[in-house]
Length: 319
Image (cartoon, rainbow, N blue to C red):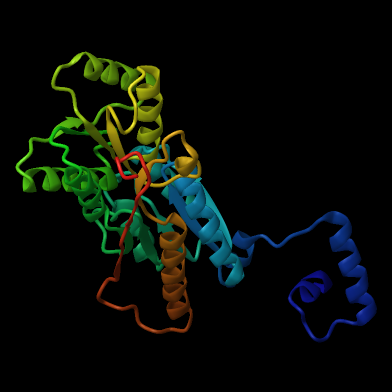
């Protein structure tokens, strides 16, 4: 009882008793258990973050979310699904047992039933980077389609007529939107789309570039739908001694640290994972605080769309 009173700052504890308890806490390394505190009727101080993996993009999202959580005096429980809908469902079931106060999710394609159960239990959900299917949840997204369209139009303005779209993961919302943006730009200019959207390894990319090198009507430019696709394409072009942008111009979706220090700095459609993740976290805490204060949840769902920027470097052909 004395320990409990000290931990919970009860005013009736003697100073000498408090000192003994604090000394014991320091010696044993005790820390409060969130789940146990919930059983006592206390509020959870943890939010959940579900991401497909911990690659550079989603790692940046995690750090931004964690910064916001710390500022609100919360912890962040992060799990990765490996881009599997089945794993996502299992992870969500596990997260629910941790008595979280709210959830941010970059969905890997689950049907939304588990998310709906979380919402019905009073846990607010905010979708990050892509909408969550089968559930009415606030979402913070990027204008993937418009950004891709702008990047491809830039290549068209350089006079390119055979522009390939290269990448993988076309089943995901973000890549699907970028492919649609590519198609819109091509068809808007009266050009035929050239799709290679199942190229996920360096070996596959090298085989594709080898075919290009041997073809008389090879693409003169390429648009890549992911940052890893940009890296693989640059490697494969270098391996075949095809020059960028003289032989093939390149515009990639998503910036990365070394993009501007490559032999030919890469022109990219840039998005900000830190900015969108921070905004999603702030939106989640707004909902958590509303619930804590007994305010009714807003019926209309929020949808935040962040624009992209076309960062001109030299790989597109600009000087």
